[in-house]
Image (cartoon, one colour):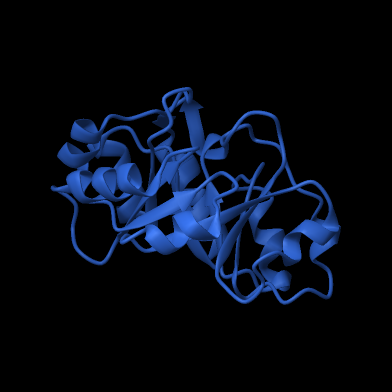
Length: 194
């Protein structure tokens, strides 16, 4: 499974994740998140990173123009839409993007099943709450275009291999505190996911 370490707030944490084998890094541009990062802070990290790493910008309730500008200015290569984005907004985006399904029921995980999407457990707050989704919902489902998020850590990620997820996304499960990664947990998470 491909791995994304989300909520990156420092160059050191970014490089620890890359050196451990992360395929993607997430940067949170949602100012109510404890992992929020400014465009200039993200740019300072992203411009020093090695090639072939996806830089994902997470957004909540922003318009297409803002999303495109933030991605261009920061150097992010993919926008993660952590809200109910309209078709009009998605069509207006110039930046490649991925939709997030905040699943309340098993039926929700089949939304957008013809495209790559991130599936997270529904909770009132956006992102990083560490709430685990009901894994039983994915039995007999084609998970090859699903990136699973929510409540993952180095101990439970290995048990997901049988489902054939495209990837996994973790934030709080590999942290010492909000926005500060634990390099040992990051290494173990990626090793167990791969």
